[in-house]
Length: 263
Image 1 (tube, rainbow, N blue to C red):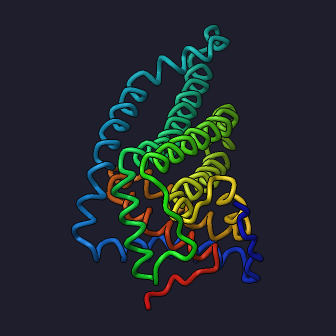
Image 2 (cartoon, rainbow, N blue to C red; image 1 turned 90 degrees about the vertical axis):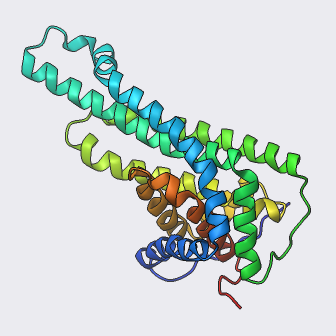
């Protein structure tokens, strides 16, 4: 199916970025008004959250050993520069782990909670007037497509994560500029991942949503970066994930030129 191409809005990029942030807040407001869906939405996020917290704790426990493993050239250095380069390496490992953790958490949680998050997204669309152009997609076909697209996005996150990990070794830049770039890359990939349900409902796949979100990239980035930052907060991913699904439905409708106002 050929995706419609929308003209990018003419408002400033900064304003559109904060419009994207606002979509997450609106998604949160829509979500908390449905207590039954709140409980269902948190269950898959709790399962994924427990797995990923355990994985990150394990990474933090072994990070000193990993930093030493990748810096054998510093073995003969004096204590201060050796410690400094290994602290940088440890921070780079933790940064890469955080980036990949946020992105893969979303993919895994969406797969685990596909029926729950589909229901949240559908309920949001019903409040906004229904789903224009909806197609009937069997559950197993939807799940298979969602899994395939999630694998592709995780592969992209690894592809971007490796050079960002390497850049994390650069003094000062690696601890200031690179995290900002990581948040932007992570935010874009999260936006692509989270709008999956409303696009599938219209018979559209990953290339379609990538093309459509590009038409208003600042808004998609604003939404995605806001989600990314929330996911970095302890328990933030578990609590925000269902609201992010609701906000992503608003983002999808806005990107497709459809109403995001309750009628």
